[in-house]
Image 1 (cartoon, rainbow, N blue to C red):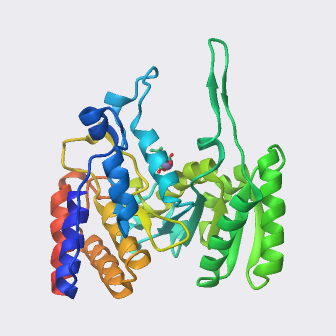
Image 2 (image 1 turned 90 degrees about the vertical axis):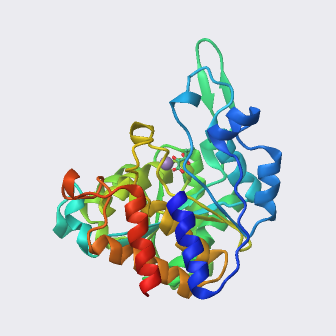
Length: 338
Ligand code: IPM
Ligand code: MN
């Protein structure tokens, strides 16, 4: 988060923008402070802001199975309160990182896809029940919820290669049968110029690593999108690289890396800052309408990576890797040099 904020300030300076930044407690930090992962003062500030940049949340301190209050509840509450139902997760393979992935370079070359994950519905938000002998999570989707996410994905596909893949589990789930029906209708009536392919989620998981280049825009429900985007991050080389933008009806958005808080490496100063820095770029683009600034920041990250500024998760070897703040320095230098 520190590196993301440094980059945001540097871009604002370079282009002569004045930003009002406010830092607020959230997640585990807020639980420690006041027992609530999403304090009312934090929520109100987010509702009034043009955009929210979010640090990854969670950690062993707050994850005991019997815990009643969890950082993740704050995140789901914030997504819902902001109405950000469309979660964009772009996956682009940087040529210099082809060897960082566990997959073969010739499969990865030229991969450029975007997941549009439904973010405020489905099993994440359904009723939950628990007794001594069983547990229940309910998955519900309404026609309206499917329509609006499919429209968001199709509009995005129109700006790209006009190829939409919709992912569901309609051979088993009723919500998926509704999803498929609604998607087919919306696409046929409103987006006849965008090609639509339906794919079952198990098959999509396979095709994603078999022929990732074939994908352009992928739209799917909340939990499938959560799982598949962690898988897709390995196309780019590391979970630490991927940014996300969560949008609703207006331009207000919530921006966060797709990774978690990585408690296994916490405090070592080696977390990859690129997921957060690239989320800042998405924030500039989608909420502030600053396309040139967004592109400049993306270019700075790309150049820094190309010239070897890499944390251990994407470095060729540990002794050729840099710390989180050194990678931040490298990006800042390129912003200032541009
Ligand atoms: C993500 C995360 C969250 C999610 C968790 C932290 C609740 O994994 O943004 O992908 O499942 O949505
Ligand atoms: Mn996730």
